[in-house]
Image 1 (cartoon, one colour):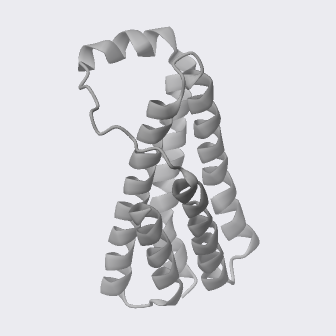
Image 2: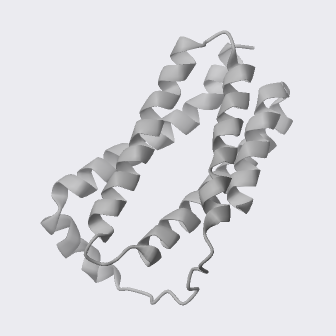
Length: 156
């Protein structure tokens, strides 16, 4: 919930800030909030999902995330002259993520057993398309987030 709050606060700040250093600080808060939100959500998802359904649930979650990374830049293209409205709308959408977080009554176990990095190579070999799509989604994420300051500067 803290990650969602930081994310939404940063988006609201980005809608109104114009100077470099405050924008830089808001982008840092945005990254921290988004990272925290994704780490907690994905950990909770993996912990709560039944082992036989975990792959399917994770796939749906990743697909939904990837669609968000596609539609986000598309919205910028549709509303190039209204970045403040777009950022405020994104903050409102981000705040909607509080609903499932607040509704969850079970605590996520903090005891996560560490795994070995050696086990990742057989997983990549067994599911190359899944890891390929994850790589592509991550690239899109990085590009979209990296382009936000450029788009904001371009729009004044």
